[in-house]
Image (tube, rainbow, N blue to C red):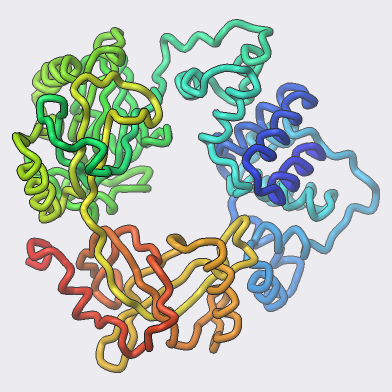
Length: 528
């Protein structure tokens, strides 16, 4: 545990991706099994403890310190794990040897709801603040040290001099603490055999469209489809087993059992997950009601049925198709979809684009469809290549919607941003009143973040726990993909992917947009 806590602390204070990779590789070289495998699982987000919860940690600290002191400390620090790590008052009377990471994982994996608090308190009292922080982060699956699951796979590939695609293909077929995987990477064992298991295959991605890269237009070389506004998924069917993965290789099967019930025939399908009522595709706002629901109830599945628009096929009946051209894979995909006999499984329609004018016209029409966010252009001779190969697939998204809104509230971020106010709530005018219309934590540069943080600190007028209310004087230009009616928000609207496009230091707050302006951006069909 000592080595793991030191690794986390070093990662937290290291900004360079290459430097983070070097730290992890050094840790792998000098740390024995199974500790190093559990560390990889923790950083990648593959490690879960059923009864180790944030609320358990909070209740333990509130039993030991005054609640007002905790609230003030949490507001100042901006991050619960670090707050508890420094506030924890107890120390064991005698020095207790720290357990190994593997021992900790074993004990918390076996712990029950009743025994976790006592076990956690025992360890927190025997650790210093850095070790306590590492333990809480480990248990609550919230490391936030700037290393994603994708980054871990890239680091493992570098460590073993393998391709990241090989790591991704193996990832869901191996389990923590990854002893066989690490042995293979070090040349001490054969590649793990995952032939009988459901696994994720690396996806092929597109580039934002620059017209002069593909024009003058030659429709004989391109397949044009709608770019649907859902989430990219990979459907895997192997004999009696089925799984649904997100683009980032997260297994989301448990959230969409109604879709998995509809599919059969061994295949790996690339497509878009959507809410579908027969052949009608619902807007993203409907899908959002299903996302992150681990066990959707029957009513939700009936009112918001999950469906799939199939884009591509990677394998069929165990035969890999990735090296075949898109035009040939398309025929295999049509045959597979036809055999499903399900209205929930539809093939992505190819669009006729005989001229450059027709292509541009289709893009304009696509922007009027609530379920579509633009066009996809794919070379018909393209193989299915993991990553983002140049010149093969393009996405031509609709232009974002823009409003000028007034900053209302700010909150500290997480991880590297925990010392900055980086999460902002903004509003639009309704008469003399500002109503919140959205939140954003992206779109600005690091330099702009420092300026925003400084402005928040100088213009705060109130506090609500970790949230600061600010003077209603700063205007920000907000870009977003769509806006939908919402009964959950006081303003009556909900934005899709809002981000701060620029800071309007030059614009008076009273000249910002009204709520009526925002409502006018809702598509007519949704207003009905």
